[in-house]
Amino acid sequence: MTGQPNPCLPLEVLEAWFSCDFHNGVLYWKKGRRVGHPAGTVKPHGYRIVNLNKKSYPAHRIVWMLYWGKDPYPLCVDHANGVRHDNRIDNLRLATRAENTQNQRITSRNTSGYKGVSYIKTRGTWEARIMKDRKVHWLGAFATKKEAYAAYCKAAQVLHEDFARLA
Image 1 (spheres, rainbow, N blue to C red):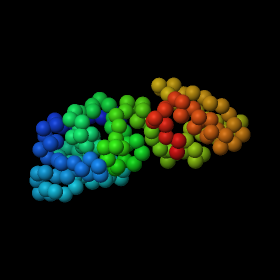
Image 2: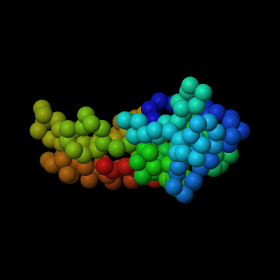
Image 3: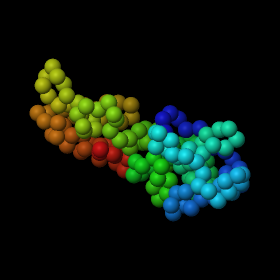
Image 4: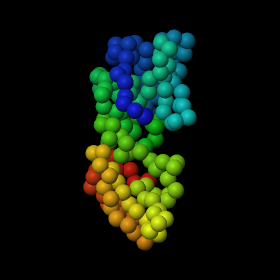
């Protein structure tokens, strides 16, 4: 999710309201009108959100807290495979905000079709850049976007390690 995560509800409250199938990543209501039904709704941004006491909570943070018994705050809970509603415990991992950002997919504003690659019209070349620790690393100018993307991929595997998302 965007921004810094918020603290979750106390564990006792979550355990009273939800049960979880950690293998499938599905939360179920234990109280209220929908006992036994899956909790939450997948929203347009792709995350499953649960509403409780007139507040919204990301289901992946609740799943994490129920499994590990502690609030992950201030860390993010990252979806390793990039599928925002896949809340299987094996797919969830703790990440800093920077690591979570490294694992993002290509943005809709990207015009090259490749992550980390842009066309420099004034030079007629493709440029590759990557960010690490709030610093932009220029990887070079290339004749083709595939060459620029290869440079980005190589740098991402070194700089972002397990959090490198190449597409």
